[in-house]
Image (cartoon, rainbow, N blue to C red):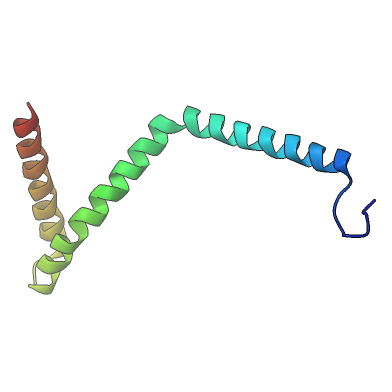
Length: 88
């Protein structure tokens, strides 16, 4: 099946190229269909990464977990409201 250089014959290389291209098209279509769900997940991860330092700061200062979570949620709501007010 292979020639002396270890390369695939021309026909087999073409089949692999076609199958690889088809796989990329299918993966791309799947990502496009899942975009609303993926956007929500990625936005939530971004918000978590942005808020965790404030939560950790409050925890180091001796604030309870529940109060620290409430305060960071309130902080996030204020920041989002300010951004919406700025953009609106």
